[in-house]
Length: 108
Image (cartoon, rainbow, N blue to C red; front, side, top):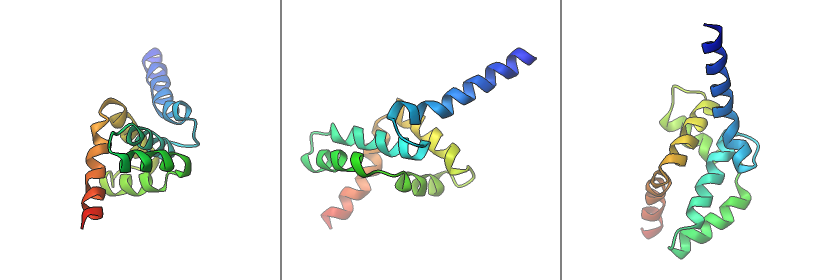
């Protein structure tokens, strides 16, 4: 029982600590934004690519916090951002789907 608890605790710590360490930022919401902007900077669409490059340098985590509070209302933003980071890590299309709303706003 003790081994299982210790193993789960280590896995939880690694899952929460990895996003900010991997992106070189201060927290999980900041890491979500940094990852999203890095994905956008690779887009062939010049406008989104430029947005991604500029955004990666000015991100603070506020947009991700707002998004997570809206979509994961029952979770604290810290946990919601960690879940979102791992989701984006395994499926980069999540970022592109979220940006479709921004594209539609720009076109109107």
